[in-house]
Length: 231
Image (cartoon, rainbow, N blue to C red; front, side):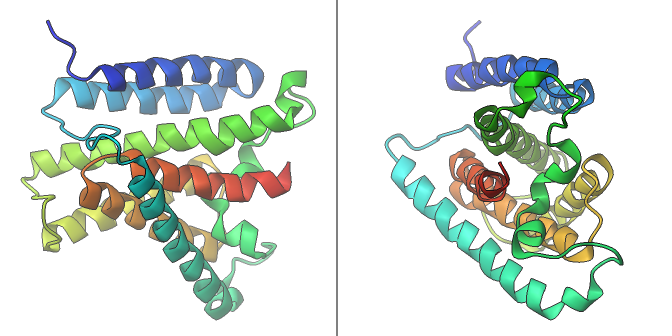
């Protein structure tokens, strides 16, 4: 039987190997969370008539990076505006800054390695690689796969921006916020709102490009901007 998409299988293997390293050197519970995401993503892709791949347009990486940069700009502008307007509505006791608000979709306050963990967990390079790139790839693929699967089940046409698409995007973005609230410990109101906007922009990027490449770059850029100043 022919492999549905070899690049997807290679990415799957790469993420599994990387996740094994993450589990050993960081936290077992984090490995469990992201393992579920990876397996779910692959089951959806190979088990359902999924058509979104990492790169559906050969030699289009530059455009994907450009689109991701524009999308990141939208998130940044939203961060600045919302941080200014709603700063007074922050959850009591939460420290506020542009980075802790605008880029806290990563939730590193809860998952960054602590001194009690293995010695390799203190490596700045491995922290950047793991949380800036690996986790970004896993989360993006999971979100996009669920998005496409639900669109297929509920007969949502992703080729046009319609009310069903908006409803589906809003629901998934809200679930993405709930995940960051429960699993990553993000509680301040502005950060949660920015996380919602980030998820919405990510899904719209997936829908417009009909692939995962630009959305993956967006997530990586976002995470790196948050992680690098803190390592």
